[in-house]
Image 1 (cartoon, helix red, strand yellow):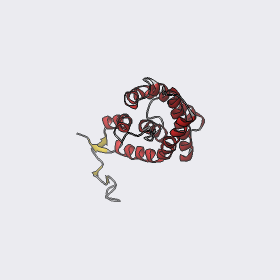
Image 2 (cartoon, rainbow, N blue to C red; image 1 turned 90 degrees about the vertical axis):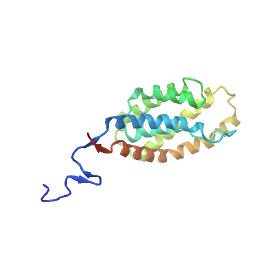
Image 3 (tube, rainbow, N blue to C red; image 1 turned 30 degrees about the vertical axis):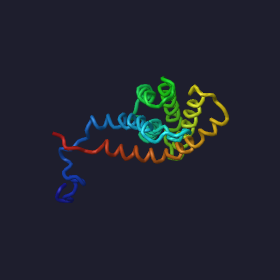
Image 4 (cartoon, rainbow, N blue to C red; image 1 turned 60 degrees about the vertical axis):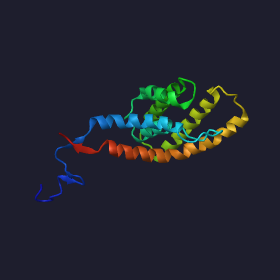
Length: 183
C-alpha cells in the first residue's frame, strides 16, 4: 500500500499508527463545556434588564442537536443542577425544564431523524422561547407586560446566538475526537 501512495498511513500529525481517541476527553468535553457555559453568565456586567443569554442551555441544545445521541436523555437533570446553582432561578427550575427539553428533543429526533440546520434552529428557538417564558413566570417576580417586554432582547439574542453555539459545539466535537498518541 505504501508503494502506491506513501501518504496512505499518515495524516496532518504524522503517522496514524499508535494514535487513538482519548476516552476521557471524548466523554468529558460535552459535560464540561455545558458546565462552563452555565457559569459564564455570572461574569458579565450587571444590568437592569435580562440581556445575557442562558449559555448553558445554548450549549445543551447545541450538543443535543449537533451530536444527537451523545448525551443521554437524563443529562438534563445533573446539568440543570449545575445551572441552578449559578443562574439565580428558583432551585430545581433548570433541572426540571432541561429534563423536559431533553425529552422534547428526543421526541423530535424520533419523528424527524434527518433534519436540516434550519429545522434544528427552529426547534432550538421554540425550546428557548418556552424556557425563557417559563423562567419569567416562575421567577417569583410580578409577571407584567413591562417585564415581558424587557425579556424580548434576551429572547432575540439567545435565538440569534444558537448558530454560533452550534458552530462552537462542532469545533469542540472535532477537538473531542482528536487522535492522540497512545502510550
